[in-house]
Length: 198
Ligand SMILES: O=c1[nH]c(=O)c2ncn([C@@H]3O[C@H](COP(=O)(O)OP(=O)(O)OP(=O)(O)O)[C@@H](O)[C@H]3O)c2[nH]1
Ligand SMILES: [Mg+2]
Image (cartoon, rainbow, N blue to C red; front, side):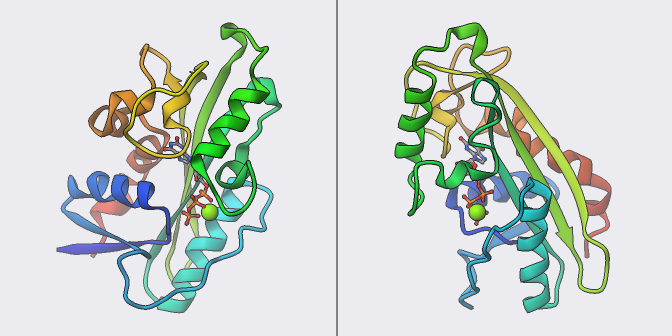
């Protein structure tokens, strides 16, 4: 079976990539699956693109094989785009999904439904040693709920209601999420590259 290394230590992302790549007959291996302990890459960039490239190029340079990375986050209009590239650690270190949700709900407590618009953003980067890194960006539009609901997914899924639905992403579950997610919408733009993977 063909294999791709995904430069992530996020269990939720790793799970989704396994399913998303399965339909192309490719095994997605995350850094959590590797025996070799790889360094945590510091995400010092100021855009999703910069941070994604730091991860894919950093790991590709060490392993000397093609590597894909995902830098993603939640962009909330009423918070001027926060938490954005800081989504993972919005409520501080170490990263804590529950605390992040509490902080978003607190910051939005006086914001009415029609102003709670937001989107998930995903930038995928693919780095092949000696070649220029390529980027694809995907979005998933929605609104922020007033309380957490559902138990699937990770991150902010319990408070994100995708457009066209009246349940949160965490209530919808992985089957539906993988049809509409920002990650999926970035992946489909890589299809040509994926088909040529050896
Ligand atoms: O509800 C969510 N559903 C999603 O589908 C999703 N995708 C991203 N996010 C949020 O954005 C951070 C990424 O930050 P991030 O790209 O730096 O990843 P990370 O630090 O978690 O792992 P790594 O891939 O860097 O190892 C994550 O932690 C989450 O808070 C999501 N939340
Ligand atoms: Mg990260």
